[in-house]
Length: 251
Length: 197
Image (cartoon, rainbow over the protein chains, first blue to last red):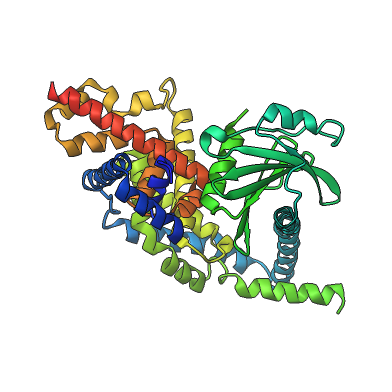
């Protein structure tokens, strides 16, 4: 394992899964510069806790909130209910509920359902790429080789970045087929793990950023401009997020 | 089953999982049971964001009223994160309002940071203890870092919970937290050298 400030901090914050946590612990026992860094983090944490007061709410605040809640509860809602005939109120409630239900279905359910469908396809494509012998069509660690290779094979030009310096080297790219269209698949490595990044223009409608996991695989989705991105791997969510952040901030 | 009857079933289901209606006593009781226990967390966050007791008090009071109004949208789950998200938003809209209402006074870090006033700086030199320095350094952190640090170190919330409150990706929480710690370390070092002179 290499020295990583990020991993040490995540270990400090107890955000690592047991396996990764154990390997950080092991690394700390043999690497003096990392164990010094870790000790400094621990000392800072102690300093913060003893220096920064936890401000408790003033004693009378709770009662004052209870009072204003009661007032709000009675003044805002009860007179209105009292004025209106029950039959109309019941009809209004049903109409409102119907609107809210269809609104929920329209805004909440539809997008996640679509995202779930894409996620299922993304996981399947990722696993397929690992089972076969077809991980990359253009094996290259050079983004300036991979990007032009897609010319003429796709109706868009994908963003190809190399993050070898940050520990996510580019391995290559291939053309894949996903959600009824050809997409670019960029392949990155992380230690022994493989990350597939699927990207294609999804149009102006943005699907919100989201995380998915299935059978030990994780996927994260984000978009930039008209382009949509799905990164999938057997890496933990945290490392996958780290990769996503690199991608998002790079220009 | 036709569309209308399936919709009726949907309606009933929705009705069942929703907390009792706002304004009725059971709704208020449930709200008080689930959300009021997080009062200290709400106050602590507001106090660290505003650095002021009176503002923190007003904000928490307002945030609770807002929370009660939104309570129908509460889908169970982590009540603390849910409340803190509202407290945080209330803080920021409160500051926007302050900015507009106080003419010619620009609310920014430089004006409101305690270090900006020479009196305070002097006071810091006098108190000079390690704790006073650390506390000042936390107070002087930009809000985007301060809120995350407070949620992590004082509230001991997970990256995921903090991300929910602040509307960020967990990776962003992680990198901001890391930068906050780096800044704190540098600030504490610089200030203790200053006071050692």
